[in-house]
Image (tube, rainbow, N blue to C red; front, top):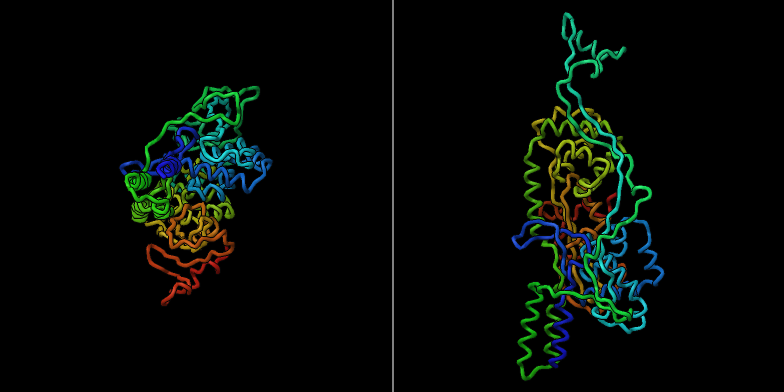
Length: 461
């Protein structure tokens, strides 16, 4: 029985070294500060993720996924239906890639049952490359200069300059005062012709072996997390119990079954941090620079493009390649602020300049949360809740509805049912705005709040 407990301890608490895959994802440091870091995942959960990919895909299908020319983020999103079941964050492209290649390289061994644990897996080494690139850009700048004119009135000056048919007042004919660089448009980017990928050496390596199936990665043991330490403590106490039974061990495993053994993003802290940002943005008056930024957006993009920008979540706006040059040029780095300004443009599409809004407040950010009940494949029933800051209810709610699982929702365990996958069991149960419930499902009991304005099934998305 002691050997059983030791095996359980090893399986449930040893973690995969985070250095063995590239990239980071949203997380918190020990002080609770928001940082980009790597989650930890136990070897047991990693192996389960590999088995899931092997079970539901042919080897050729997995190879096809690995060799496609799609964005690595999109590839990870495609595999999310497997990786999310073992606790992998939705934006952990590197960890997902490690699981994918482990499934490809160990496919036959897992399929025929000869490989039954993480330590039997062949794992590819992580390598570092130098890639010679090029980038063509068109840079934009504003030139400030002085023109000397003779006239009887200011109106004559304005008319002479505004109707400069002969090109008399171009900046290169007059003395310059200053030059201000605004932005640039990326024209083309790629790998230089004739260049080669220069391998810089192993970032993480495995031991050499002549027998492929016996190759094992050389890994250091990382410290266990709080949940893991709790399980270790209780199982170690059982080692001294003379009346030890397998039931004692299973009871502890059942107790912790619903607690993830991977490091998870602290949702409450994230929401609290974003709430502070939202509060600051909601109280911030529009500046002259922001008015110029909005005028540039309106001038540069047509209404269909601005409509698409309005529908985007605030964190997607910051990485949008169409407006990123403008946000960089005008120093607008707050994602939520960008969303507010884009929404203000959309609400005033008849305007070409926005100086009249200087000193006023932008459209208010609200925290919109939707809750869904669903049947989970891991033999348990949960409710999942996720939310995002947004100005317009319909756009934000549609974004949440259409991309619910990619928002890494909070999971609350209700009960265990010991069932298989239940298709079509999901139902929306609650919607709230800034913490106030605006819609509830009638099946929740009591007197539900039913306001069809917020009913997800009535939205046009």
